[in-house]
Image (cartoon, rainbow, N blue to C red; front, side, top):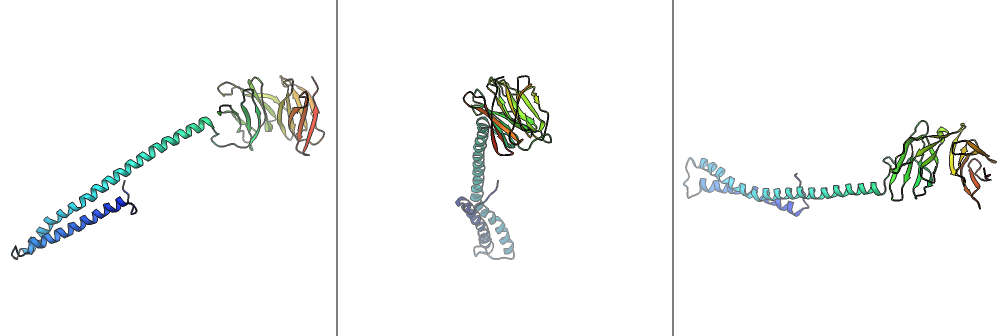
Length: 286
């Protein structure tokens, strides 16, 4: 590796030795040739000029020794440069690799970034389940569902959903239900301890309409409530996905989300985005 920096004192010293060596080479050769070729101690003769050039080429190599300090110092500098580069690069690479692993272990992120986070729910163990919907749909079934564990580990549960939206998790953490808006379905994702999801399937298939299932919630009896946007209805279905109740909107048709509250947890609060209203209904005990 060759390099030169005029602002570096060692580099300037090395090139100073080069200049001294070249000057020494010239002057030793020149004065040696003059002295041995035409000096008074050697009488001039017709062969004097030949002796001059002979003496010059004999004496000139002596000046080459003036270059030796330059070459030695230059080699030392190059060696130091190589060592410094190796020493500085190796720890940096190792540190960067360690930081990358730590980042992946502590706060992992999806490789392509989030598409557009939508809804979330909390599990009994403190995990956060959330959907990454973005602009996905039947044309681009790449929506994702994630689980963020209390220790910071992020699990990608599924990455092939056409528009994942509302989400609820079973109290025993056995499965997750996800509203798949553009497919007019609610999917069931069985959960495993290692974060894997297998045998994902359709739990509920709605009849259609301009929208689809949006917000989800459990009622006090463990039945599923589904806000059907575009239709203006909130459905309640049992464990076999059979409808047991339909709550019709008294405002617009964009029933987008819902939650439960009230003294006994049986009051349903519904957001209706077409008119910007919040609706309230009371569940029957069925």
